[in-house]
Amino acid sequence: MLESLSSKTRMPAALLAIALLACRFTPALAAAPAPLEVKVVVVTMFEIGKDAGDQAGEFQLWHERQKLDTRFPFAHQHDLYFNRTTGVLGMVTGIGTANSATAVMALGLDPRFNLSKAYWLVAGIAGVDPADASIGSAAWAEYLVDGDLAHEIDAREIPADWPTGYLPLFSKKPYDPKRPEPTGERFRLNPGLVDWAYQLTRGVKLEDSDNLQKTRAQFTGFPNAQKPPFVLKGDTLSGMTFWHGKILNEWADRWVSYWSEGKANFVTSAMEDTGTYQALTYLHPTGKINKDRVLVLRTASNYTMPPPGMGAAEHLVKESEGYAGLNASVEAAYQVGSTVVNEIVKNWAKYREAAPGK
Image (cartoon, rainbow, N blue to C red; front, side, top):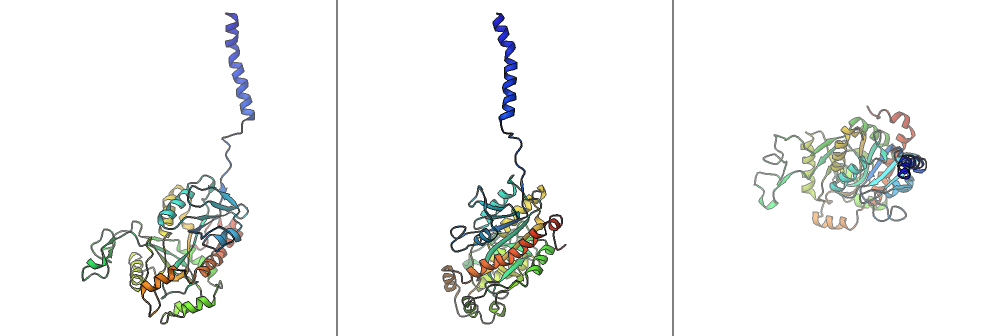
């Protein structure tokens, strides 16, 4: 009986000793590393093959030239890469609004990174309206317009007095003057920041080549399409369907103007930007990101319609075999985009607290 009582009285002391030893030798699980401060997130949408050493897609030049050499596994279609010295983080979202929205949302909620002061640069290729620019050119967008949120009637059933079978949600006809309130059809970036980026890069000399010259020479009657590549301001239309041709180009022009109340000009056609920015608008109220620090740079890999004398179907098939301006547009995205990234990183003490262009 005495032995039993003695054992019971010794048990708490033994447990205490074990607990103290555990505290001494067990790593402090509660002391998680501080999130890494990110200065710039470079958002690309696709890569062709490997991230280095072969034909470059949108990500490869950033990966190689910005030395994004620290890999972070990421629960999406491509891992993240970071430069710990410069604070530049690169991502590949995947093609289309579903991929871009989910990837950006996942990154915005990732506890490994502090993105509260970060700038976001979307840098990707696009189709370009020959009325506005040439392949190889780079356009900074202020307005992002969505081309997917709509009603549609097959072309064979369009009423005789309708110019198109495509009409806004919650409307009664195409380009209804009673314009519904946008619910994701239109976004406007920080105009001061966009203009700052444009002014900083407008003099960047972009790559030209015999191939680009030969292609743009076909666009007689389109003086901007025949210019050597240049930097401009111009708005973008996002849509999951790769459309092409003169008639759809006219629709894009009018659709962008309609949703922006005449303030935007359709210049580039891409897929992901409204999905990317929609995710960022949801994250903004949490303080995890600042949507007023977002830039969208689209560079022209192909024209959105054929040159005079060629049909839309013929030109689309030809373009599908390889965009005439692919390499030039990938290079332009890096040349122009990195000018902005390098400026932000170099003067981070200033830009961390206040965005330029205000």
